[in-house]
Length: 162
Image (cartoon, helix red, strand yellow):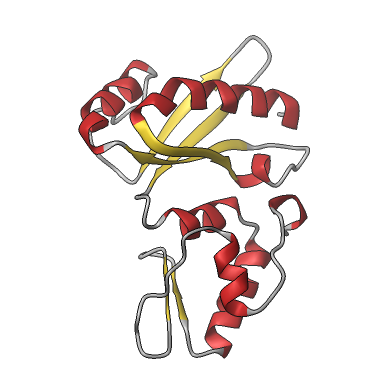
């Protein structure tokens, strides 16, 4: 699917699911402005009090495991021209900046950050969505740009990431 069509569908999903979240954003190839989009990827941090309603919303949209809490949900969107997968990844506001970076990608950018962390004897923990310093202490990261700042490198906007 081309970027314009995929982005329009993604924005519609943001409008539909946004009221049930503290944060929600389009990530992946759409955020990186790639022209060919294989799937829509959305990162969200659910509002705790509205989690049940969010799961019900996924059920309404035909999500196979709708009411079951999970770290990822998938919906298949079809129209008269084509179909595309929409993947939703769940996180928390605390883990948001690193998950935003990881789910935006690309692979080379993630590998570069992981290597720079390793060179400093730090650990980029994908499973914890955290960077730990050489003493195992969690580093404070409040926004995506903080990752670059901590590593002493320029921030690379998503559209320039590989």
